[in-house]
Length: 305
Ligand code: FPP
Ligand code: MG
Image: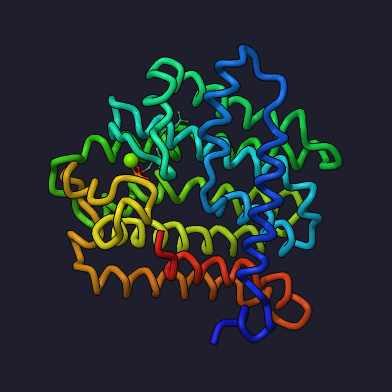
């Protein structure tokens, strides 16, 4: 039984309430963008739905560290902007050449390639504006630490580096260490930034930041293993994106290297490691504050899309 269950925590209600708060903040986040065509392309992908797990992780980490989640909302929005940008660019013909994302035509299918690239660029830079200029009430040195985390997660040490190795490895046999490198950078780096930035806004201790780093590594790899499994087992309808893409693109995946059963066992093991890292913060009054992050870790392996 998980700690989340033992506190009587209603995860479904938490997830839905958090998602709605995030949707509201995302909707309000794009105002001054001009020209209108750019704003439309940015909004098309930013407001296309989705689980909003990254912003919710940021808010949950802020609360675990004893902070006010409202203060972390601009950063939570920034994280979703970076994630959305990475998906717009990932879907481009020069990368994964995908037509379907979140159940709708991909950005470049609707607005053309040049506009999709520019909408992604505008979302990425806007993310830093959200933190630097639109985060009232957070001390400047904490915002600086958040900017540092977002930079590391987005650039060569994170998303970009992971994506480059991923593209280079298409059609080649890849070992487990390389696959892990790709996922820790392409997916894990941003998840790490989500929990660390939320905690930094709350002024978390070094010990909690270290525990959240371990937590993020576990859920980041587990998230990607499940993504690989769903690519094989789920339909495009359920996923809202093209299923079976990994096979078509001849990508190395966890199921390909380890088989489906071992991949799922590995994902479960990583989620258990992630939750264990938070154990010192789960005792007594901490149980309520840790419940969302524990439940989010479980959700990563139980999700069907
Ligand atoms: C989806 O992976 C892609 C990512 C998680 C990251 C892509 C990163 C970039 C395009 C780098 C851009 C970054 C900057 C800062 C310009 P996937 O193809 O395995 O998943 P999918 O099935 O959802 O497409
Ligand atoms: Mg892709």
